Every structure is written in structure tokens, then in C-alpha cells.
Amino acid sequence: MADTQFNGSPEDGDLIGSDGKIAVPAHVEDAIRTLIRWAGDDPAREGLVDTPRRVARAWREYCAGYADDPSVHLARVFEEVGGYDEIVLLKDIPFQSHCEHHMAPIIGRAHIAYLPRDHVVGISKLARVLHGFARRLQVQERLTAEVADCIWTYLKPLGVAVVIEASHACMTARGVRTPGVAMVTSRMMGVFREDERSRKEVLDLMGMGAKR
Image (cartoon, rainbow, N blue to C red):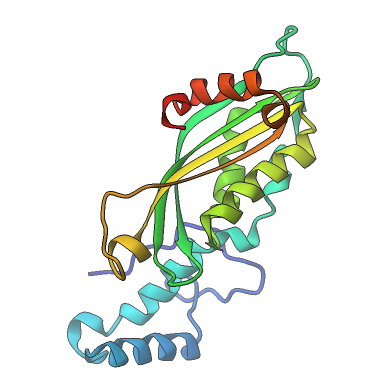
């Protein structure tokens, strides 16, 4: 089977091989072979010969957020909103990250809301902010805070609310091995933290009101 094409943009300084894909340094491939060997398999057998290169390229894609500054996605705003001054909410944004403790997948969805002060941002930009932080080694608590803090700092809204629900393979596939468990984290800022009615409204819009 041919290698999967790397879908991200190479960082400055990346070497590109003759196949048009990122060239993987030998020491990176060697490290992955060592892990395969330590796990009990033979990295030289047919099915694993090209695995180190595939794994290395996959991890460059998983961690593409290190080359991304999420705040740039909030640089362009729109002030002509026809007097709109209510909550803006993007619900059920799917994302994937990796736990920094075991490098195991974190798979979930996020709800991101803000109360505009005098301008709004394109809704796709909220998802881009999430993905910029998610595509790094993470813990869910920090991911939630980073997304909220970024929106608060660069959009300067009256309030920000971020709720993330996710499952963690480090818990479902190893250790306690308990599938079907979701972790929920939230960060409320501005009016959503200070005013109970505003917090209830945004949680109800997210569909989280009855869960909390």
C-alpha cells in the first residue's frame, strides 16, 4: 500500500523528497523502529518496513498546530452586523488532539460562544482557533482555557463561553480501560462568568443546561 499523502503544509526548513512528500530524517525513523522492536515486533517484516516513515509523517500532521498561530484567524472582523448584539454560538465542532501524557488520541466536540461588543468574526474562524490549539500535545483543561483566552484577548467581546466534551484513549484503551466515558470542561469569561442568567442562557443554547 502506498504511503498516505501528507495533507498539511510543510514548515519552513522541511526537506521534500522526490515523491513530493516531507522527507523524514533517519533518526526519527530509527526511533520509531526502536519503539516497534520494544513493543515486541520486527520492524523489518514486510508489513512494517514503511511504517516508521508513515508514522513520522502522520505525527507531523497531528501536531500541525505548533506551526499555527490561532490568533491570526481572529484578525479580520466585521462591524456591519445590523445591530446584532446577542450570543454567537458554534456548536458541536468536532476535533482530534493527543494527550501529552500518553500521546493517545483525544476525540471530541466543542461548543464555542461569545457575546460581541461591536464586531463579529467569520464563524469558521472559531473552528480554526480550536484546531490550532488541538493539533498539539494537550490536556483538555488547557485546550479549553487556550481557546477561550484567545477569543477573549483578540475579539474583546463582552463574554466568552467554551465547553468541550471528549473521550480519551489513554483512559478507554489502556489503564482503567473504561470506554463510553466523556470528560467535560468549560471556561466562562466576562458576562457568562459574572451573570448567572447569561451563563444559563448560553449553556441552554449549547444543550448543556440539563447536564450541569
